[in-house]
Image (cartoon, rainbow, N blue to C red; front, side, top):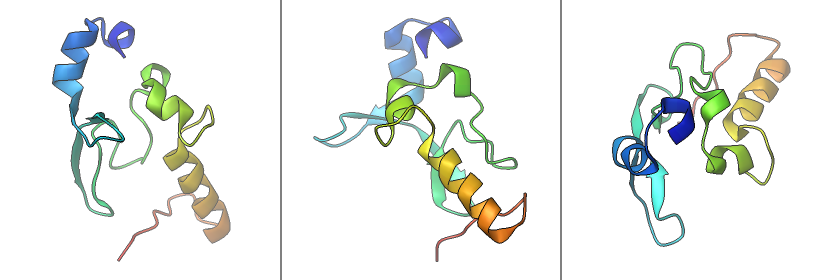
Length: 92
């Protein structure tokens, strides 16, 4: 992310992350989301796509132990199953 934003790692950490828990000491900041209460600050709330996909951090590249965004895979699957390219699954 530092290279993508042309910032130092420390600047990226301060601007885009918050303290997590002992299993995940730092996490990406979230913003309000009508479907999931909060979601990653880099998730476009209209298209549901990652706005920094090429510059995403390692945790996103590896989640869940694969090289693609887990949320993107989930959303793509749901849209195929629902036969609706604009489908957004909600959790209630």
